[in-house]
Image (cartoon, rainbow over all chains, first blue to last red; front, side):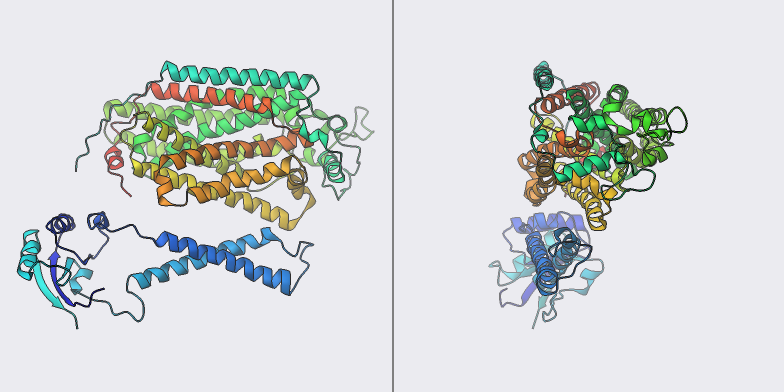
Length: 175
Length: 462
């Protein structure tokens, strides 16, 4: 993230207007840093040109970690450290290990995925979220334009946002 | 946004396609004849016969016949002579093998057909809109049901003694004709199940299943075709109501059908989730068949209303339910393995201690779980038809193998084989099934154009 803290934000009260606005703003060569919406807007990530999330990869790797962890734990406990004769089964009863391996796979995969998501979305405990406008949690959508990422002058940016149907255009500076 | 796609489509069952199916049919018939000739002239294809009668196979022969697990002899059935001598002294002949294979294919293709109807009913009851565009394809698969019913009854009528141990009359008489001498064939356990496992009731049940299933098929199709002409939403509500009723009936009949047609092959053995196990096998192979047909029709220029999103969702279905099948497979296996009760574990001993069946046992798991799990895991694989096609074909073969593994060890004991007979019969059934399905499909419009949810299906986006 760039060091700049100076933004121009446009507020929209309709998701269809927002979707078209995002397309128009991008077409006019303006770089959009982020869009904030009070609810998920279908197709927004596509018009923003975002790459697909790699969260499934994280999920798979964490799941694999969970499986390995589970088998290591059970083999360590039951096959190496403290053998017990339960119903005359082997000391390496793989079918018996599968339910626990499955549970730990799901658990580690889910926990890992949630935590990766938190970190990536700047919801980590040590992160300070940037709140552009509190109304984005209520009824307004917001397009945030970073002034340093755009070479176009501020006046021009404000005009673009106004033209695409923004109900309000504000400046926002973070400390 | 209005999407302009033609909704007036008609599947053309070309003579070229019919010719291909005809060739498959002829090849199948030749293979079956070849298999029978080999069978009559000595049956060298009985791989199982090669290995010696080891201790374990000896054990399960005894276990199979004596009405009890191999290690216990309950009072009253303790007589170790009380097993089917005929089946032990020499392996089952080619007739038994033919019936076993007819039965496997009956089960497998009946499954595909009823899953077609089940899929349609599910869509109505869950008020799903995404699937509307290709709903005619699962519906067409149901057209096989009347033929399946006739085949099921005919094969049972002629092959019941070969397929089902419990159909032998002598098992139920405690004493011989004089009323005093104990009947050596008497089997206390099977006799205890006589109220359910008797030929008259069995045939009655089978007829009832097919009346319910084929009835549901004809009703759904009739109403859906009327909707094509008249439009409106009233048909949708009618179909939803009757689909719900069908699902309730199917919940029961799918389980009891699985007991009747599959589980009663091993009449001493039982598994409480066997109905679900068979259903899951049917369901995932039915989904694979639907997906495969949808993809192939799209590649041949049909089904313009179906886009990559629909194919993606079908891929998710196939992916999820191959895991579901594995879940049930494993639930059944783990409990039997862990409890280790002889009369339950005999089922897996038969399959795991045999040199012939144990590789198939593991191949079954690899094809039906490991392969689809890793191939269909990513989003891209589910959106690109080549991966889906390969996986669907693998799953269809894998679940045929699953039914092979459910039927053959019980019917053929350790003398099961895989050769011309198996291949040929499957080709015949496959060609016949496809012929019936595509004939049914070609007679109706390919897209239910007045379905109230068609517009939703066109806009389906994930």
